[in-house]
Image (cartoon, rainbow, N blue to C red; front, side):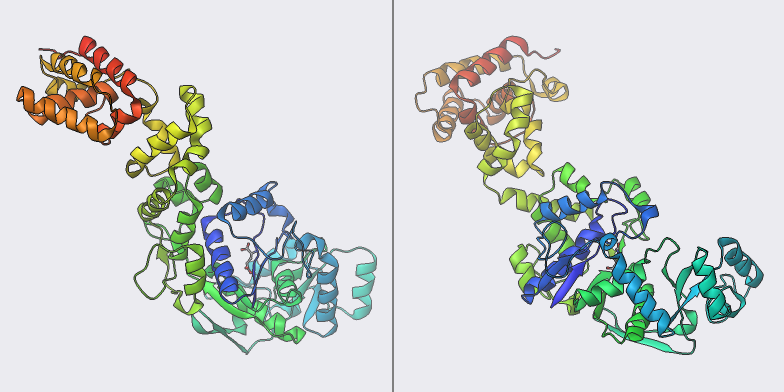
Length: 491
Ligand code: GLU
């Protein structure tokens, strides 16, 4: 089994593209096959400067390593279409020689005129095809002598596929089953452009053949191109790979998830935006794996090796699948919480230190362990500023409601107990607090609320005893004294 991911560097890698890459990867790994990366960069007009670098970086971030491809190389290289032009020209010539393609000199104006002439209510989009090609300037209508003279003198020309009418183009799609297109509806696709570069269709089938690709797995938007590809394989006498077209990714508001409606809904579309937002790669992969495929049971959390093991094209659905950012967040929280706090700490240490001053990695790891079930992203730790610095603001609304006239005195009294405590650990802190409540006859809230407020400035938060242990005796006493001295209710 040899599969390929064949992005065009016309923009940053889209999450739909990452899903396509992932399904290819999973299938290859499941069958001990090869996963090939090929850059389809023949469309100069849509070329985006740093798109290729973004594609490589995004795949590396996701951990989808390819077996053959740019930079890495391999036996079927080069893996960039712009470096394979000679081969496409060679095949275009073969197709012309065998009568499956022809040379066409028509200018844009002539093609526009053809369209204008044939446009009618019953034929709103006339095509350059079997029904019109004999009205045009091509090697089917001009003598061979003139064709070669025009080429000699440098007239611009393209090479078009000669699609014969009246054929049913049939292929089996692993996702959709039997698919049939009538050749009457297929135009005489340009294969080589006047700049001497191939179109996607020609380059794609030549490379899939030369790279010995056995399975083509790509988005549904390419389904309508497939009959052209099947005709090309036939014309060359090559065997077509097995096809599989993945379902469209739909917007939660309906319709295809376009960049525009994703932006309106606050859904990132490029992988680099997910990287930037701090998503865990495992979470994004797990989520995307289930966006169109299921393992046939109710498993949701699956590691990459588990996905490889379970993946099958037969379980990919053909209906569009709705993108659900909340669900992705759920996966992210799961993978984040499964990580070792020390690992998260090492990723966040620099950001935390540059915001709050020196913090040790051990302290940060303990802070993360305390806060993990309140975090969705590893960078969320920085938002809990009271872990690293005494609060300078206190939640007004809850102060007004729950800070009593004796709250300051309650804190100071508890400070005395704490000052005498030698074992500064959560269980002793808890025991000491409970003993205090018992001794004074206070309700839980009478001490817990002012304590929490003094330590964090907020009415709710993590386990208080663990927080006190983490902050240390000196810091806790200082925050309690400060709160007792400064916080007051309005009454
Ligand atoms: N270059 C096409 C793209 O950008 C590849 C389609 C295919 O996989 O055949 O998606």
